[in-house]
Length: 334
Ligand SMILES: [Zn+2]
Ligand SMILES: [Zn+2]
Ligand SMILES: [Zn+2]
Image (cartoon, rainbow, N blue to C red; front, top):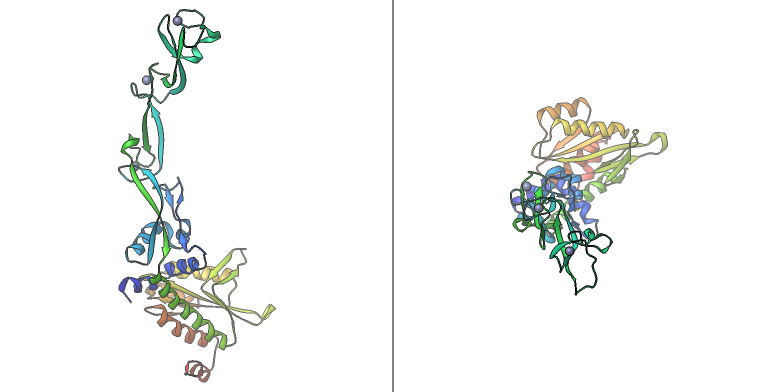
């Protein structure tokens, strides 16, 4: 396994995103144009798991071959920061006003006036007052042109400008840069790694079933608050008032801090779980461990998922007070 892949598998948030993608028929993360974002687009699905830096993380994964980039669309962007949040305007080439209208221009041959059709009220020339008689004889249509309401000049081509809504930089539309948007697709390499992760998930599920529990993974429990909480796995036994739910969660980061443990505790309490088992990949901070202990969250630490799963099954067995012989039997080769 290359370093990058190993790093990925340790990153549980990414792993969860990819597991979600595997269930998607397209297996693709697509961008969405969204003006509330500084660059003007975002990756909503990836953000659910990776937060606001989703785009950078997708790029990073693509650069190491875990995701494949596919062309999605070409947009125009600000030459300074590549934002596609642009305000487009047409300007008068003479005075730069944006107060321009597109009109049919009429040339009155006897007096030489060229003016918009709307100014020839009741078919009379606004300059000499004579009536327009016959098209091609005493007057001509010059076609659609722009007329500036500020300086009254008319012209064929307005100046097209864009203003970046992020840094307010204004530039000629011709000077806009091309910004390619990409979608990201799961590669074979990544799929293999995920299959290994799925094997671990199955391994854990099977062992916990052997201990007499039913297993849901991902496990969803509805909380007292009405919110449905999503966990890596939920092991249950009994039914009705006697039902016992044990939450099994995986968290991965360079170091799992106390906030992540507190948030897990809050979700577990809301979901009315009788026990919580946390697999930390690779480690918890000292503070996070203290919090876990004071809230009676059982935890194991492991360098990667494959190491974590056996430790977690063992810890689970202890948690549900499985006799020592039974634990030995559970792990003895059949
Ligand atoms: Zn800009
Ligand atoms: Zn003008
Ligand atoms: Zn006239």
